[in-house]
Length: 57
Image 1 (tube, rainbow, N blue to C red):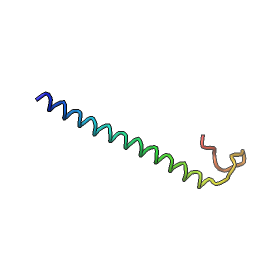
Image 2 (cartoon, rainbow, N blue to C red):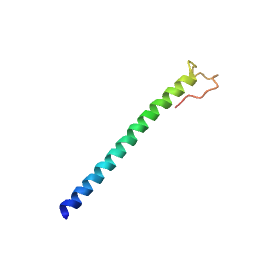
Image 3 (cartoon, helix red, strand yellow):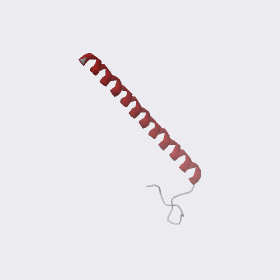
């Protein structure tokens, strides 16, 4: 009984670990996509004092 419970807990932990890993990878890909979209929209605009766009930081 203990062996079966341990095996079940290990399987659940592996599944949770995989889901967390995929969520982390999705967040990295989403942030890279957001940076790409932001750069495409901003173009080559300088961040001077007279610029209409605030700097991203």
